[in-house]
Amino acid sequence: MMFLLRALMLSLLFGASAKVVQDFQKECGQFFANGRSPTIFPEPQYKQICQTLNGNCYYATLYDTSKKIPVYSAYKFEGVMGCTRTDTWYVEPQIDDITKGGNMDFSRTVYIQQRGLYQAVNSDYEGSGYDRGHLAPVYLANSQSCADATFTLTNAAPQTKCFNRIFWFEKEQSLANKLKKDCFSQQVYIVTGVVPGTTNIANRVNVPSYFWTAYCCLDNNKRCSISGGFIGSNENDSKIREMNVADLQRELTKLYGKTFQF
Image (cartoon, rainbow, N blue to C red):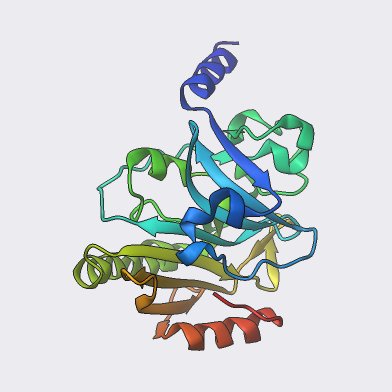
């Protein structure tokens, strides 16, 4: 009883909403360069989410309810704020039951008797050997509240430990340094995504074959004055390859087996 009461009080203090929308270009287009999102796959398994905490929307996610991983998360970079990790993970009850509304809830307090039908939950990762790899990352968050809002399982995918904690994190750091230096005073837009793989954890959650990122710095004329991307295989000895956005689009189109554009 005390645990449930504490969870309820925490939910009231730190409650969040993740609004599943029909068109997140209209609902949360501020996270896309010139308001235009990357490719949105039309199949009904893909859900568009405006990721919101305490009434503030911090990023946008295209989520695959079949594979139970995001396709990508889009966010803005405003500098490194030194945010701390809370490691309190949320799920989106609305994805499994539309009558639940848009409020996030703690992963440990929902689906106690059954797992999410259309999304991952913490128990899927237990004993899997994989990290819950952020797409919109803590390191690039523009506030502590934004960092807290990244801890939803709709913004995470299974990632090998060394790749997540060493190679990918180092790439996030080098990207932040580049953007601070080269895109000073410009608006910076980033999209981070995954490519589905051929294996699952817990017989439910797809393990991506690749993680990728694209970025754009908009000048005063709303043009991408500086842009680029990189992609790395989801392996402990991963090699991350840098490339321009056009080449990344071609690479992703090949890997997805369908047209992908930024």
